[in-house]
Length: 340
Image (cartoon, rainbow, N blue to C red; front, side, top):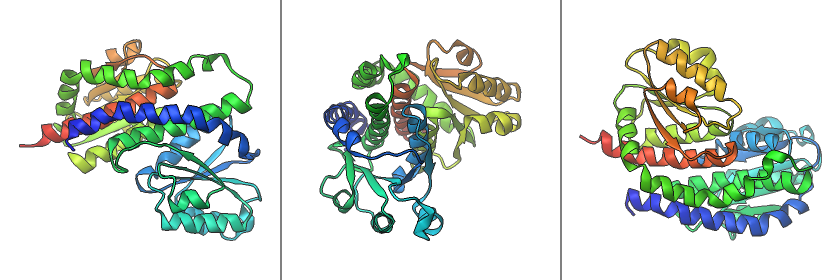
């Protein structure tokens, strides 16, 4: 399958994931005894950094604290000895394929300590799904390593957190538009893919030109920044790194220099947009080339940037899913731009 075909399958795959999530997640959410303690989250491979996404989503919506750790740290420090986790603690494992030997070991150890194991996966008949207490499926009929799987898994995790808040917590006014925005996401992706190819190619060419590129994202955009940097390193440029927004402002922005570039991820509904704007201004003052991916209402960041891509305005959580798609697209275009 060509790169363009991989991108074109994302709206359909995302539509299926969200339709199934709307039909299935509520019943499963009600069955899980979430408790008051932290949720421990561990992801496999490409999903390893989804712990940071889970932390943002579950703390922002249902208000549950999250502890995100690697499988190795959970095995060595948290589940050994088992008394370190209280009985009925929720352990969430995220694995696209569900074929994860270390994850299965973790589940067995957790069950010995009477923990509740929740799995987010794409594969209903996988060993991990069969052994879990509760399973949320992405149900995306795409390759496990594809950009579509990346977008669908991230969307499913965010929708799960929102559904838990909607069902188990008192509704908040800012949640009112969220169901409609989730429903519109596939159409928004179709729209940007049709309307923005030229500006995306221009941005991709800028991203591979300097010897070093930092992708900066905080809050809901933290995971898209990491995934975008990982995809760019694997496809086009090894000198790409992801930086959390507050870390960038407090450290990296002051050391940005001429000849380097930064790509800042934000939006007009982002709670940390002011922090991102300050980081952009500081990096530009130091001579770095500043790129941004935001929406048209984020005028201060646009003004502080040398080049930007403006996408439709959405609430922070759905907007970050659209941002992740854009970064997957930029990585594909950067691969072509980097070829001699």
